[in-house]
View 1: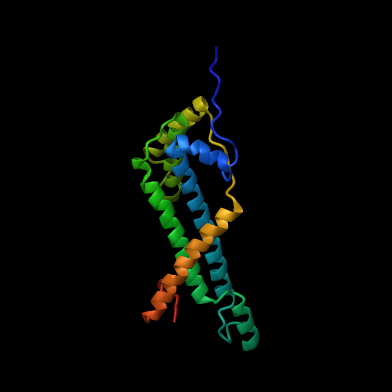
View 2: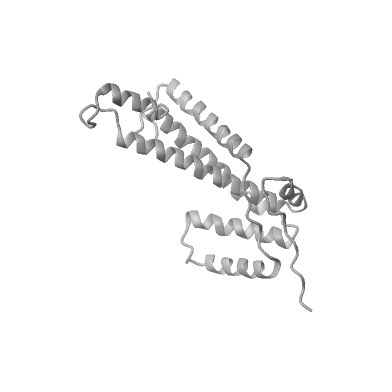
Length: 200
């Protein structure tokens, strides 16, 4: 008789279902936090890229744009501060990615207490490799194969959606830290920040 696949988690990661299931296995909670941190860093990366694009399209230098200086200045104010906001967005992204990397680095210290927890840990390992390495090099295809086997035996982790409240809160946390850092650098009289981005 075939064994029945266990129910792993409820399908919503933003509710209490995942939190209560994660209490039983710390690896699930770690993976959820790691996924959220990566999601926030991607959102902040998009903000930074949007500001960068606006600065490149309209640098505010007369002669490089066909607009009058007044219209250029009006448009620059809509970019939330030009280079200063870009520097803040860039640092906020770094803070979010640093949080994801710290969670990833804590993986060896977190013990999975179930097969689902082992799958969660392997998902993090394989997911981290997508960012930093060549997925065709040893041992990544081998680890992906083991993960595939485990999913076939135990089932897959549910796809969840982060809550808007937590997303806004995490973005605001990193943005505030970045504002403080950029303001501190400006107060110290730094002439340049991040290469070619002037903060003064």
